[in-house]
Length: 156
Image (cartoon, rainbow, N blue to C red; front, side, top):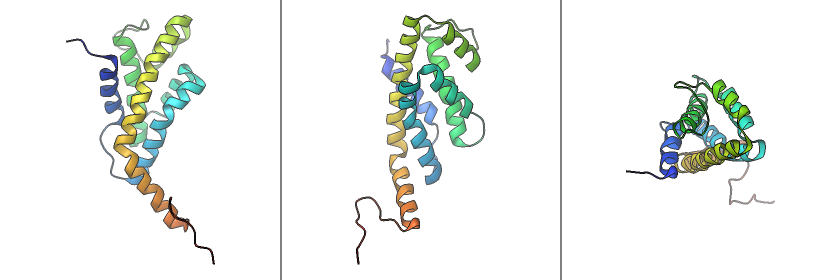
């Protein structure tokens, strides 16, 4: 059965976000960074956004692992759709080299597909962590003595 590109993107975005983290502060960081990726992609371009994500990826905390999964998802999606000439086991560096050698039409096509993934990534991050991130914000505001959103400070 043929599937729509956005169905694949939802699946990839779910993998990138990974398992739910119960820590509100970590959830807030993950929510913020994954929601920022589409903006970074559109303002800086695919090569710069990918290089940024790769520089933040690793095997450390949940956020580093999410960035690692993001880079892997981008590379695998581009490879599976044959958008760039990539080998059987392409690395992030292989992807960037192929992207740097792509013609304008190919670069634009790859960017458009990654933009779809970024949009789903933002939506999934909101669905998964929006409430936890908001709770972390409220806790920070209360700890600092600032009024929570929607509340006014009382004036003497």
